[in-house]
Amino acid sequence: MALAVIYATVGILMLILAVRKFNPAFNGSPDNLVQGVILFNTLIPAYLLPALVFGFVAWRFRFLEQGLRIASGIVALALCCAKRPWR
Image 1 (cartoon, rainbow, N blue to C red):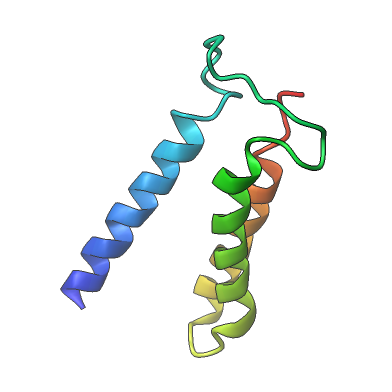
Image 2 (cartoon, helix red, strand yellow):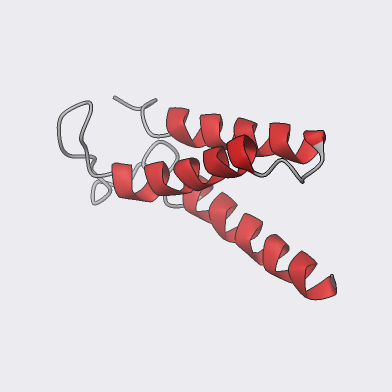
């Protein structure tokens, strides 16, 4: 159980770091340009895959508590919405 908590904490911290520090919406340096059309741009690999994983957990992991499933769904929606606010 303690190892799972450590892995979950590290994973959450890395996800927060990726969304907060390396997101072009929050980091306005000129080398962080988002390229591509609205639907397919360079941020899809960074945000869509984690959003799909969290969405899958919220949808299929019925053995988790309801609160964890709701939190996973909220994270999935936030990651889907986090890739578009700066256009």
